[in-house]
Image (cartoon, rainbow, N blue to C red; front, side):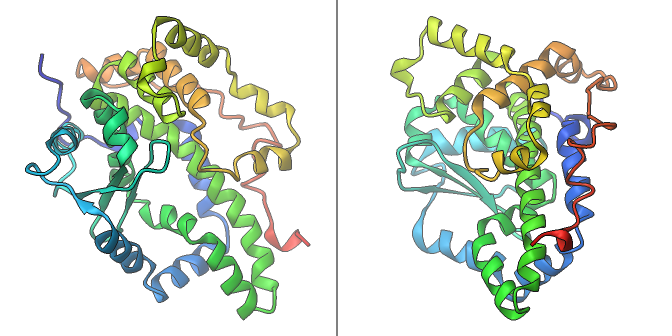
Length: 304
């Protein structure tokens, strides 16, 4: 059965409300323009692209069709054109993928991604990465790649004053990156169009190889995901909550599965598949929760 395609798909129809809220907070951070300026000044976009071109294997229909075909299908389903370039990089012991390139986006996936994931699961992973291209916020993602170097550079050139401000935006940036995963997962599901496939993909992204996936491990993972409650974050001190997301490279696969299953249960995923407009999401975005909104009110100049 052919998968549904979404010509003219807009990110707004599948954007997670936590993603939107975290992005608003990030863009209100006063230091963001300075960081974007530094990224442009030092050609970070070109540098990251050069690193990929000089180190990784370009994927084509001829050399790695098992990667190229689901990649093209994911881009077609989610209406991404022109087609980005795809690269394969060395194994790291767990599945990794990334997207870079504000002007000319490219996507990378590692050896484990090719070997561990089925073709349908690759649709989920590529859909996740494609969503970051459609969102047009790759410049922010790339800042996270070079944040340690930027922190040192700005701190040294401003006698430490800039470094204090960077601490605030770093937390806002990493918080947004985690929340943006929820939107990416929704795009991944729209690409593979099977919640069970999305679930096993998330399990593998969490580090579990195929040989350990069986009915019991999958069912237990789903139960664990359904029992995870984002509201539990409210019990944490606001700074503890912030620093829990500083390790933004962690897969957060249980939390992500929890939010994705909520979207499926809401009926909005089925509405999109059936060509209907999604209903307004009744999601508690903590509008009146001071701790949850700490990023919006963060004043980096207050930190010492």
